[in-house]
Length: 397
Image (cartoon, rainbow, N blue to C red):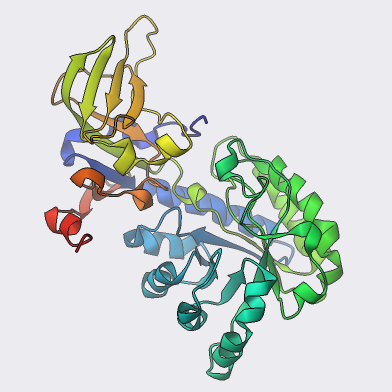
């Protein structure tokens, strides 16, 4: 899988020695730029009266210290369960839409209290939850109920990230949807993309439209999920604007997008240090960044993260970088460093604000990266969070 990271932007001029190592550094100015782009798409699509909303998907980027930036431009957040819904209610402005592949009954009452939309993965779970939903409404916490459907249109590059892959557990299969399943449903949700441009969305909608058209009169909203790389420079934003306008007109519904990666695309780096080097058929470097602990998608996708300032000299022998854990496969990739490959050298990987930050873990006792907020417009730099031994210890007993 190829990384979709773009230009390093202002990070090309950031002094890596200003932060400790390892460290995530998020550029507030780039976040604002991304959010402005998303808001501009929404506003253009809504110019003739269409009801369009954009939510930030917290599953991808939940650095809540950045919540004021997101709240200034976007309409709310989408969450993936009780804890994210709590986080949203504490720190984020706007609406909260909560979806989970399966809700625990004992958590659903609170989720209803916190959320504006609650989206079920199957009509069977919705049916079992009816009493909880009715009680929530009776207690002054009515929610708009949605059903996630599986469009059964595979568009992804990697099967494990493709919600429409055969046998997928995500969403109710579109070809099984009946009028009975839609009883009490006010919204339809589908999420079928991963780091993709406009055409896969159009292909998905072409498949979904005819099946859900009979229900347009009862539907209040249609949530088209995330995976839209709207803030990427080459994304077809004009086509998206026209598409959203037409979808709202054709359905009479509010149209919602919930990008996550697009909010933080190219807005963060992961700074690391080379700790040791040796030679085993090729140069090998051990770093304080672990693919296993700090960038698990490197191994899951897999993909090769782009390096800030990496040299392009093909005649130069690369060095294989890996983490300090005991896992033999804790390998990030082969790189031509922009600095001498010797202990103490600083380097950074691009486009690490989304997903990497929320997926970190402390396997093998590897320390978590600190979190910094930098504003490339003012050069202000603040340490948001440092993790210590107690953070590791207190998870285990």
